[in-house]
Image (cartoon, rainbow, N blue to C red; front, side):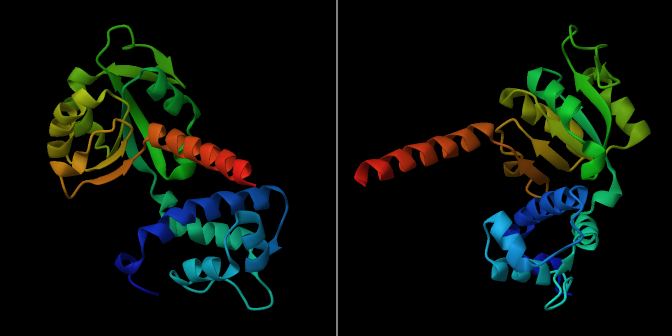
Length: 217
């Protein structure tokens, strides 16, 4: 099996899509699927799928295809979902509340152990069975429960000060919705930035491009 540090991020970013789709097939009662069938459903070439999966070892058999449940389990293992990393969420506003309420953290490799905010109106409220705590006292919580990742749903202007608190406590991994570039100050941090604006602008481009193409026909 190749070293993980030789695998490109473009391959890694396709793994969750494979994982999600295979689990849907499993729920639908599909037990076996070929790379050609996968490619037709995912909009990728069969060669691309085989190359991606071969980065982590051989999972299928020529002429037989992939066992859906087994491949889903293997990709889940590669993604590391069994680790159940302890995570905390900062910002119990509309976005933070939506994420805490609707994301299946446990199914995706994480355990949400705390939600924090600085607003008196939000502190003490309950989100999906978890009480929102005062972020002022986070250090005490961290020393006791030792979270490994933080989800940031706070304003961009507040992120730097928050990271300056979190990083010395051993939290070096972030799911960042703030649009603040954490790695400028902490280059060894592991950060997954989520830019909803970028996603919507990409959709806007695709709609505009599609309309332009139709006009030219």
